[in-house]
Image (cartoon, rainbow, N blue to C red; front, side):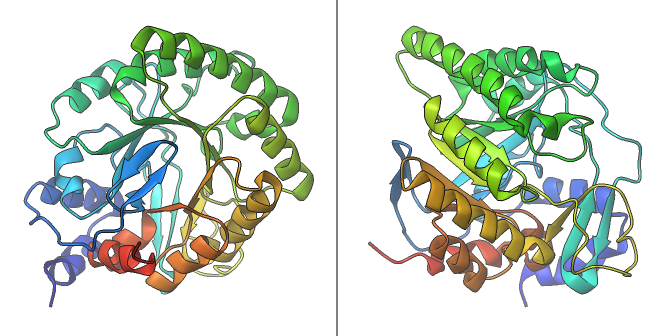
Length: 332
């Protein structure tokens, strides 16, 4: 029996947020996992394997070294905002164990970009680190680009790539940024900031957009055109869903927030495939949402993903899921 199988009953006996923090603290004592070599080059970056940790688990970049031991080919930390903020009131995360699912409404709780970067600077691991950026809850949507540009300026030197998160359902108005006019203004601003920073640093850091699974085809078409127009390097499909399909009537299913885990797999994978068809290989696709097995990872690969990310499946399956998903990718 694995160490995680022994620890899971204790973790699941706790409040989900308390369990979240305990698991992060325990990661510091993890043994280094052995995973197959599956090197891949995506967005000009050389990944030891294509399986990464999704943003949201380590919001403050405080546990990078422990999480890196689990065998991930890359880590994404955040979401970080310009100023520290506590997030939404507790309780704000709920298990739906019958479906290997979670509902969360954290609301970008984080220590703010300065303390976040101090944590990043303390890490010993030097692998591929994505930094996920967002806006403060009290920044009006019409000024959201100021927050994103500020964060991009701050994190640029520390990031392997930067993810622009406009798809969390837990910050009021954030998903409005996926609409065509707002998205055009935001991505144009960030592309211009990136070009200036690239000249200053002598290094062009890839920009990635993270989108919701709750998109219609016309929205997918508009987003695809906009990210191509502004030279973004990748797209993460997807964040959590506001749908409750697959968990109707179960305890906590009516809680506000984003649903993640197995029930979102098919929906998020369909959105991924739609972007594949629209983007035709012109930028990298990262598959996230509902991966709980090697078979789920293969579905993302078949839908166009070059990389995948785990979060909720890791909570239910433990670190063994990382190795299993790495093995889903063909050896080169």
